[in-house]
Image (cartoon, rainbow, N blue to C red; front, side, top):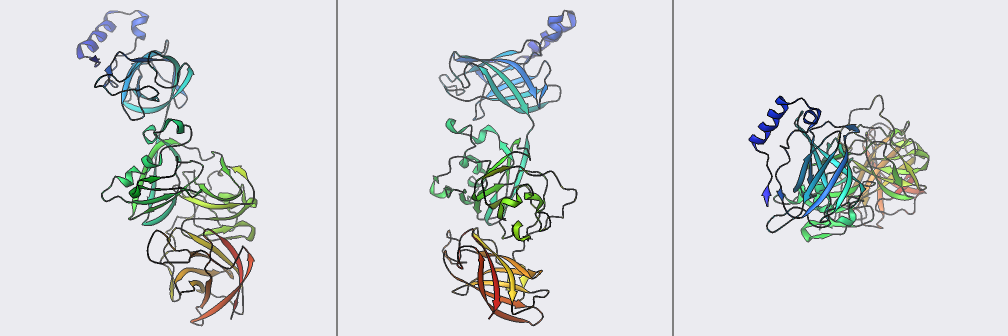
Length: 460
């Protein structure tokens, strides 16, 4: 075995030949390989015949280097691109104490432009032959380099509802039978589990499957880009994922009923009660859409208390029918994104902090009292636990009624099926009224996780 690293003498010889000859073959010859060189030649070889090399759709010049890595980030072979004839790259397998490619391993190509000094990730497209490493095999391939970007998601202490708008790098993937679906959940959250102490409590998907690292249990097969995730952390943290951008107009498939809607644009969008722009292409089929902080929008009733949407978020959406959609183009003017209303005081009550699951309640009308500025409504459990506060605006009130966090021992909110008590604060009278409610829309007058109810309220 020999470790291939071009020597200074070899590079000098190439330069001397270039000076002493004007023949076309030498002028077109690729520069010696200098960047991707940290691999070992072994008797086990899979040849990749590269016929086309591009970056973001544009052809790359002679002299561009190509490195072939495993999905674990181990370099197994490299070559220098010739724009006229292409290049054949020997990709070496593992032998004795050398760990490189094993049978069945996937290829992770990268390209290096010696003129700019930039390295880029790339996709390998098989045209003929084997699409993973096989001893003594030959494959004809095309390599397409792409620009990457980093998506940043800010997590607050407790529960978060998140999504990402990049396809992460291959280092986030493991199981070969899932490479066409999504990356591995454990690797995606390794930045939270490798900290001391670990920061991640639990991850839940829209189907009810979950990942609990401290129990070493994972029931989520892969990260689904067509969805989002409930994530609970013990302290605020910034998560970062690098990868290929997912276009803002990527098609999203929505089923009838509840769905976690990922947010793909890099730009903010409004979802106010005027035009519901973020969901304007599907608004007639949306029953309700909710964020992680308790805000929600009901297009049919022309109600919304939602803040502008931004990347990193995900939303719970209830659809009347199954359909596919995309996000609209950027708006000309979007209000500044402000913090959520947790901790805001209305009368004698302070809005509780988010706890991961809640029911949205829209009080459509009030009887027996005339709403005024500064008025609000609070929801209490039968044991008198304050679990929701909402301001009254335009004669209506939209509020989140928070459920109990089952991952803690204390009781912070409603249990499933528990009845709630509504109370009204009159700012002008400095007085609290008891309310009775009549169901207009919804299944029942008791707490339902991720539920939505429309009621009318009457002062007792």
